[in-house]
Length: 550
View 1: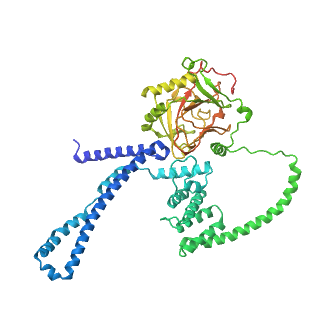
View 2: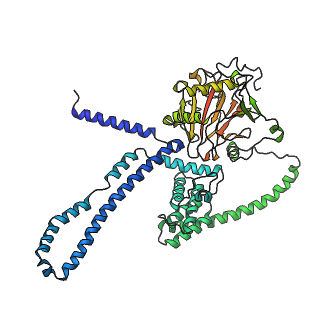
View 3: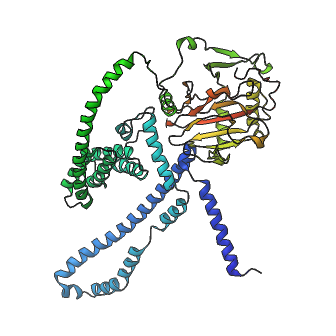
């Protein structure tokens, strides 16, 4: 039989494994606003616990204070005539009693531990706290939002974000922490922006535990790393005025001055050389200019993606716009929609994207969210080289899969997609529900598998993803659009609507213009659910085309 020691060991291992499972289940809080709401309730519980501790501590102090004041008065009287005071036998007895019993009681009161309840609650809750990874993830998300939406550092710090209902300014400590995280990521551009903001708020007189010397130390180094020696030198001098003994700053001062002299010499030489070469080039260019036509550089995808997220660079000409319509749609006289057709709107022409309005009710949305919330897990991508599923920094959301047999409503939703698209749902993937986190996004990607990839859908045996149906289950205060960078299209989230497009041409060839992305959520909470429809079962519903890309 198993010894008592072994049994104890197994018991500890079991407890540990359960604890680790709990912890791993709650990792990556920042990737889903839905999961982060749980943290607010945890914090509320801790605040109540902390208040109870403060009340107990205040009661204890009140008792000690009353005791001290009573003895203070007594001592003052007794010390005026000690012998006369003790001549009263009652006073003599009371002195013996006080010193023998009452001071002991007071000692017990002072030693009484009122913090135990609060500390044990905190220890218990700490298991479910966010980690360093969450803090860094949320900080990086803020920096990403700043870049994508071209937000001024001061705008973020004062809390003046578009669509914000709960305005929240940032303290010097917040700005400093953000700058420090950028610094640890060797991101000197954002280190400079946020250390500068921290310094600005300190200069404006904000009280803080962070001092100017520390901020200036980071700031001057970040600026030096970006090549601006003049400003780095100025800030180092300012630092030394505050702390003349600062060892690193004294060393940097000499180094920066030496580097600046060398830099100026090199610049003067380069300028002279450029002047001489410039004369030669001007001669050559005048003869070549007439022969060459100006070539326009294509906009890089990343830049296009960010522009579209801001609502810029949408490439829909008025002529093409005139060909987009709204209609009541019954999918060629489908019995279910003959008397109550749905509202269909053309969102884009090539690729053809349509939006269905009022296609999922508030009640259905709440039910889908309720079913999905307990099983939300960090969303994964298929590695294009190995085909293995893994998390990626460019996909910041949590998702859950809901099957038709879990609830009749899921079956109903799947049937609705089938009725409106005319496509077979039996071979489609389950309904995927996604909730985006802080700055939640999914960078440009294709939904279909390309020829150069390991066959991501081979094990499903249902062919490639022929089409995508996407429900918007929340309105988003700012950001969160679905954009198509190759064609300059942007589709904005609207609660209760859904968009649909084909990823493949009728021939089965991939339509590369469907490359799309989910823009970072700037303000608000974005819930979507999507249905990826596969090729198998559509042979007669969407017959194969003879032309490769038509």
